[in-house]
Length: 143
Image 1 (cartoon, rainbow, N blue to C red):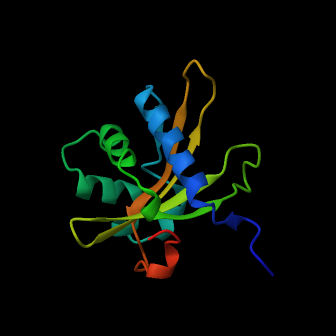
Image 2: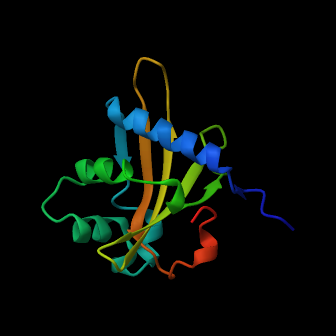
């Protein structure tokens, strides 16, 4: 049975999403970062959002570091699009994978909400943590 919760968007759709992300971030989007998550209680500390952000960006404000890093995402780092079953009326989430410092594979899951043409945009960063499983080439449809 096919997983109807996930899909692979076209390259054009991913680029459009990244443009929306850039727009939101350059227009004072609120960034919500979940440093502490329930799911992290059952995860080794090195695979948590809090650890990864502190490890990669020591002595930086996490929100400022994440804003900068999200602006560098490319279509080549796109993995897939995921429906939020817990909040079905919210926009879909996108998953990306990025390598830091030549070895640290980081799994990134975000949602951008362009709430109005007058601002009030929000970027939710659900995941920004070292990958528990190594990335494989087949995970990335546009590499």
